Length: 407
Ligand code: AMP
Ligand code: MG
Image (cartoon, rainbow, N blue to C red; front, side, top):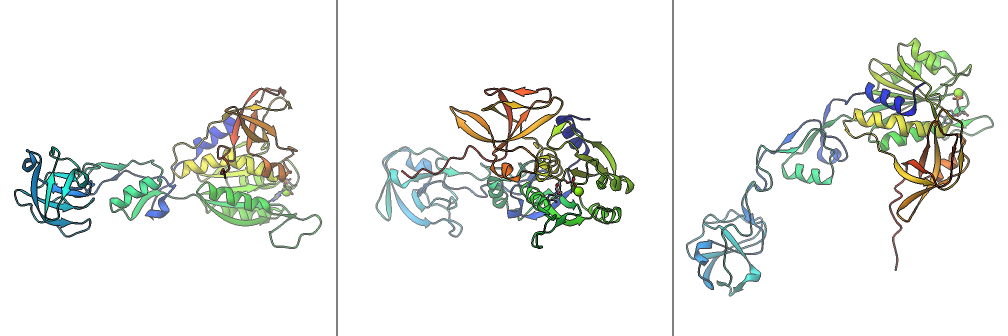
């Protein structure tokens, strides 16, 4: 039986980045660029003024104070500038193109502005206060390497370079299938013995939060035929996630039907809790994650095992968030042989995370899951972790954000 880390490694070694799609610029935010993007032109595209002031030829101001006649006005966005006459200056605004013949801009603060004439008080150096063509990025230089995650900064660069479409890794389309005769869909009338199919929705939300695209397949009933039909549908997508029906009960049919349909199981059972009965298979090279059905097990195995795989498929190169260190506030007992992930609330005290048990740890208890900030990993070999011990945490909430102060 693989350890949690081994299981994750097997999964990550089995999945590969998907191909390319071109998406409109704004849709690229958060996505991963599939191939290098090269600057089609210089940035800036023309020499322009970095200041409001006067465009001059530095040699005309070699003796200061120098008095020059002002022969024109160049606002940003104005028409192309006329060439500068010798001994003259042009009033210029930030961003306006530098007129031919000028090689410096004198900020208005360093002049005496007399309307049609200007007095330059300080020495003027050639090139000063000019943003030169190509000084930011030269045409042909890479502006984004394959593997870059697009942030607003990259969006700005791509826009400035005229890129309305961006080559990114395709989103993973993830089929989500629930199994069980007891399940009803949200909106159907609850009755004794029935359970709302909440796993499909928590998984869909998690898939979407990971940046992938969930496709809800509904519920397979606890018979072979229903499983066959639904699982077969699931094979049309980039990945399939099933929940429940993967333990050793009579009605646990997921693995049997997967095998019958030709999926190749890579492992079943992991030395972790929750998540013990998780199975992982490949169908024509596509991953099939069979997660346990208890709602908390489903969520935790998604977070720890499925999410990194989906991220890898979408081209992300960093897909596993390292544990952060915290201090366990209370004693914890466990059985030896499995890594336990317990739900904890986290407070920051004296610069360190302190983890408190968030409540009943049974995997059917949703309220402990909604209350918790993190999972604390208790080592496989341990049977007891004493209060005050350092533990590894998987943060599930941004615990660094602080409430707004209203003083
Ligand atoms: P199973 O693995 O089929 O024995 O299911 C384990 C537990 O998870 C049972 O209590 C199920 O009712 C519950 N469960 C299974 N599927 C879902 C689901 N889609 N939504 C909510 N609870 C579920
Ligand atoms: Mg079941």
